Image 1 (tube, rainbow, N blue to C red):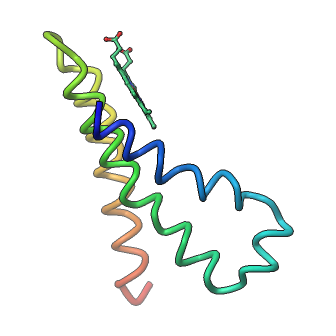
Image 2 (cartoon, rainbow, N blue to C red; image 1 turned 90 degrees about the vertical axis):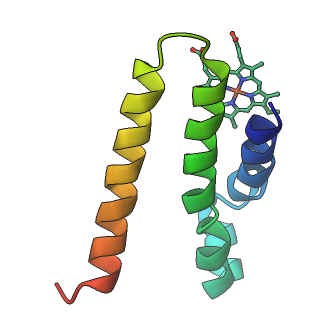
Length: 81
Ligand code: HEM
C-alpha cells in the first residue's frame, strides 16, 4: 500500500500541472517534472503485483507492456534514428 500511496503522491503534481497554461508557465521545468511518470508507472505495476494474491498473470501483462514502452522510449531517446 505504501508503494501505491507513493505512486499516487507523485501523480498529484503531474495532475495539477496537466494544463496547457501550466506547460507554458513552467517551460523546461514542466518536462523535468513530468519525467516522474517514468518512475510512477513501474511503481504502479509493483503495487498491482503486490496486491494480487494468487494469479499474477494480469500484473505480468501490464509489467511487460510498461517494460516494452520504457524500452522503446529509451531506444528513441538514445539511438540516432
Ligand atoms: C493512496 C494510494 C493508494 C492506496 C492506499 C492503494 C491501495 C490499494 C489496495 C488496498 C488494493 C487492493 C484492493 C483489493 O485487494 O481488492 C489496491 C489495488 C490496486 N491498486 Fe492501489 N492504492 C493506491 C494507489 C494506486 C495508484 C496510484 C495506482 C495506479 C496508478 C493503483 C493501482 C492499483 C491496481 C491496478 C490494483 C489492483 C486492482 C485489482 O485487484 O483489480 N493504486 N490498491
